[in-house]
Amino acid sequence: MTKRDGATQLQERQALKRPPLYRVLLINDDYTPMEFVVYVLTRFFRKSEAEAQRIMLAVHHQGQGVAGVYTREVAETKVTQVIGLARSEGYPLQVTLEPESND
Image (cartoon, rainbow, N blue to C red; front, side, top):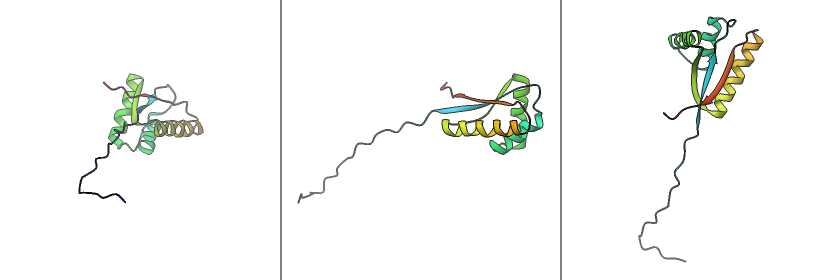
């Protein structure tokens, strides 16, 4: 049996790194209706109507727009869900992910 004399023992903590984040991008095409893109943004990315409109216009005018930033697993799931819905509705909407830059 060891005797403790009131000394505090310090435990070394290991610094946890945040997981890398990925941007989910919606890519413009000539066939997917703007209303469908807004619907996707509100349903899968929980954007307000105004924010969804802003992102949809970025997709339309700039060729792509950021729907959200997530961990890899969440981003991959959202990409799969959106593409699945788009295909079931007959739309060629492209959704991809890319690593978030640390600028």
